[in-house]
Length: 262
Image 1: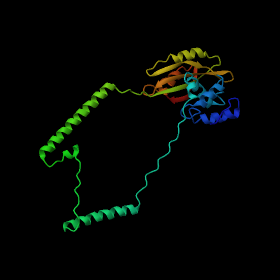
Image 2: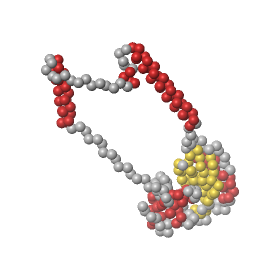
Image 3: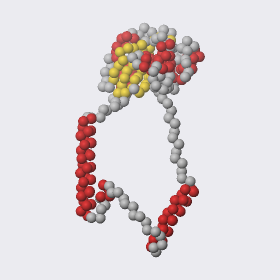
């Protein structure tokens, strides 16, 4: 496990490269290293210009403040060993099987002429399936009727069991989205802009109450806001970004800093 030094430019460069292809330091899911590295920043966001991927990761992890501590004790998934495939029968064994079958056929021929000793008759135990094929037609019908009754009772019991369980829970696909909103002027009223953005209401959209206004460059800032959307109901580009870009006199651009399934 690689340990990253947030005070070292080379280490931050390496971390930025790693996070450019991974949502978390742990990959697709956070682990102890995400929590430890975040704490090392001491709430000071990294430079978004030099380390854009690290900055996006920082704001994403920030919104998990209530569960970050639990990441430190997350279990490590162990790799399961593959079971060896069963060995195929050797040609010699197959030859023996053919030989035994031939011997049995020869024995039957010998029995026709009375040369072979009499074979003991092996009784086969009957079960419900055998009952269905009795030679007597009346017994066939009785067995089939009994089987149908058993199936009917089993289906009814399963139906009652499913009713007790109640309706199945519907899983709703959701995503956590972070947006970078840039303005035209240095003296943009970011609090007013944030209030305007958070006032956008859509079915399936929930805004995070907290927002950030980090410095981008030359005292210019940007607004970083987060939200949770229901994937089937809300389109980030068409429903949210397009709405914010319509405020042309205030907003210069809107970028998706991070987009992760939850």
